Each structure stands twice: as C-alpha cells, then as structure tokens.
View 1 (cartoon, helix red, strand yellow):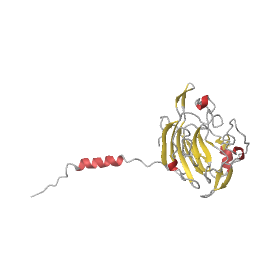
View 2 (cartoon, one colour):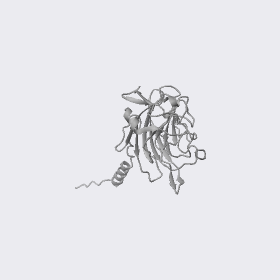
View 3 (tube, helix red, strand yellow):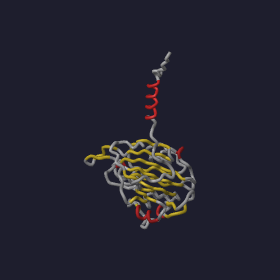
View 4 (cartoon, helix red, strand yellow):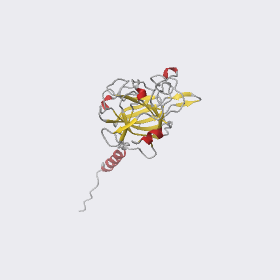
Length: 263
C-alpha cells in the first residue's frame, strides 16, 4: 500500500509569516558614537592638524568679538587617545564671555548630518555646539537641568544619563533640518535629532528660538531670539574660558525635503 505524506496545511502560512518577520527586522543604523569615521562626501572640519583649523574655521563676528586672527584656540596631545586635539581655552573668552572668541566654520550649512566629539578634563567644563550658528546643544559638565549637558538649550531636559563623564571622550551625532521660509516668513521650525554616545536622546525636536541674546548666535537679538531669519550660518563652537577639547569633527550636507530628522 502506497502511503502519501502530505505537508501540514499550516506549513506554508508559517513559512510566509517567518519570511515576513525577517523582512520586518529593522536595518542596522549608521555608525554612531565615539570614533565614528566620516562617511563618503563629508566635510572634515578638524582632523588634528593646525592647517585644518585655519582652513575651515574663523572667529564668529558677533557683537562681543574680542579675539583676533589667527585663531588662538590651540592643539594639545589627546589625553585619552592618539594625535592632537583642539582646546577651546582662548584667552579672549576668559571668565565665560561667550561670543568673545567662538569659532565658526567658514562654510555655511543648511540641512546637515553632524558629528562632534568632546572631552572635559576638569569638573565644570563648559562649551557648546551651535547648529546653524544659532541653536545650542549644551556641553556643560555638572549641569543636569534644561540648560545642561546634552540639552537643546532651554528647550529639552538634559540627557545626563548618556554622558560618559569627566576625563572621557563623548560624541554627539546630529541630524539637523534648517527652518523653511516662504516670502521671508517662517513656515517650518528647525528640527533636530540627537544621539549622545550612541543613545538617541532627542527626536525631531522643533526648536523654538535662539537663546542667550545677541552674543550667543545669529538672530539672538531679533525679537528676543524668536525672530529667526533666512541668514545662512555655519557650525559654531563656543569658548568660555575652559579647557574643553574637541576632535573628529565632520559634517555632511543633506537635503531633507521631508520635515523629519529621525535616523
């Protein structure tokens, strides 16, 4: 007697379900965190060489500018790695005079993917990363408030839990979408998504204004910082009289037609 074995009726649906599940597994995200190398097409803003600093950066010409070229930020040996890194402690910024010796990229950017690594050697170290020379992502050891470490300043809580602490390198990976205008009128607020040491800490935050007044960044003096304009801006780093160090700085132009910075 010939016995015919038939596959159970549930096998095919189960296989289809498995195939569908595999297809739904999220794709691996792009590299993030300390040591992330610049992708193809990125503009390398600092690679440990003085020449790069002079070629890519200048002092921000704000109302409090007190420094003169050449840039007085200086290179020091990496305290936890190889090569040379950039020290923000410009004499003109002594006493916390932000805007007196801040440096900004010579090139202006619109939408961008940005990578910044910073190292704070002493408690209380203070600096800041400014998107579009306007919107500060805080670098401030010891401050866990909305004005503190990793906050989109005065608009989000500080994700202090993601901070590696004094004496260690930290990384910000940022996707930024510039504000949109029609006939000179603001129609879409700037958006930012931020990973702090590989942890996503802010997603599609719509930035409300420029904080800190005219000495902080472009448009800071317009309508109390709410008068955002179409004036182009670069990536700015803040000098506040502290030995905050930077390395591995790069930026890649993007074209985010959709109002979405999540990545």
